[in-house]
Image: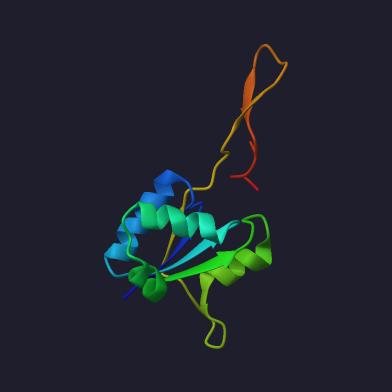
Length: 115
């Protein structure tokens, strides 16, 4: 069976995708700054803890850290195997007010996707 990597899964879009993928029996690896927030979110979405224990590996860290991203993508360091698919839900999360009348709002991290 395939192993799928998830980035940005604490948000609802990728989070629902992760929940469906786990309940379909796939092995998943997810990057989360706050692993307990991700676990709580998945339990709220109806994923049983037994499935989380069996099919989910959470790597704590930040998507801007290259070494952490590599850890998410590798399924076995000794064999140098990588995940089969990647799902990304990374994006800015909060609107921030600015004093620019042409652009009164921006995202909390507007360049997250390009970085």
